Length: 197
Image (cartoon, rainbow, N blue to C red):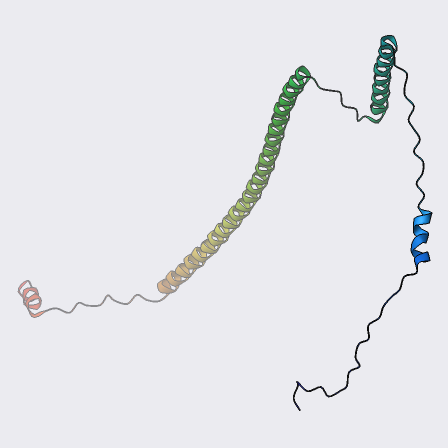
């Protein structure tokens, strides 16, 4: 079998037609009733005095509203005034002065920290010097003790040597002294000795 052959029968599609009833289509149009538009009343022309009075009321109302907002903002602490050019310049100068003061304060703080660090290092160095001094004193004391021990040991050895020498001398004096050894004479020395006799 090949793919092109249709193995199963397929039903033929039938055309479906939908009929809309004319009554159902007419109902939505009947519901949409346009509301009658009310005609606007024409205002009476205002006099100049009335216009001026309204302007004054508007200005007064705006001022009152501003004051109320400022009072409310003061309570909250968030009010910011409208800034004029002079105020901006003053604020910029104050900001520069404040920044200079802040920089000076930071420099002083860094100097204090550096001085504190230097004091800490000096204290550590002093403590180290004291510790080294104590160790040096201990070493000197040990060296002195060693010298004293060596001196006493040497003195004892000298004393023992002197005693041994005295003992040897005493022993030597107790024994008869052996005659000194006679030197061996050569032939010439012997002949001279004979002639001199």
